[in-house]
Length: 112
Length: 113
Image 1 (tube, each protein chain N blue to C red):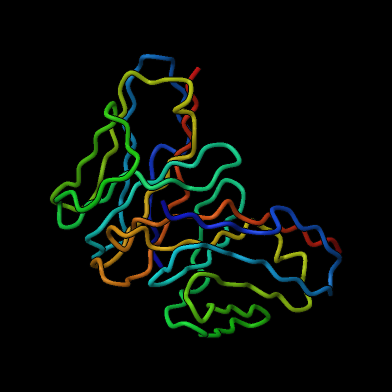
Image 2 (image 1 turned 90 degrees about the vertical axis):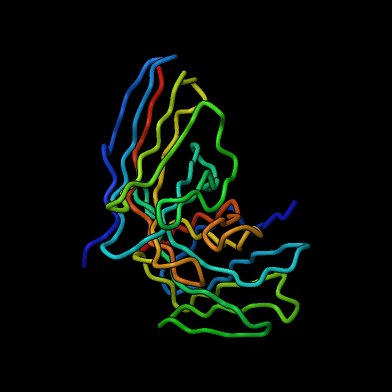
């Protein structure tokens, strides 16, 4: 069974700090996606990483896919209160590309 | 831009009742996916449809069924509801099945009492 483990589960930081969220698995994934979910809303796709070692940047967010395509990280620079939310990583579960296995998520709180 | 529309947003049912959740994908999207997210849990894949045919099946209970109609909207039918069915049910849509990003709706919150 493919599993994605995210750490930390909870993170509370001050505005301006940097942080890294990790997504690890013992399985190889053809791609990994990162989503952000606000309370009462659906997950919103942030990025998809496909190639081992790939690095993608989205403003202050940097996403990295491990060389072996088993892990990924999300680094946020100079966090802002607007970054507060639940960050989920997800990988294709072997079925259709929409059959995603999600990690348990990292709940980020950025205090002003 | 149009997003995935789900209705109703909230639904309260009693045990053993039935419920129908509806999903209207983004225009021209031909693939829909259903997910269940329990309180404090990650989303779990239930089932998906491509061009009105079931394309993949996940952890969907036998008490649930779903279909995709000719206008590409989808309905999730839930019978003999149990307390444990209380969750957020998300629908997502995409264009095709090959690396097209998923767009999630805002979900239907089902409460079974």
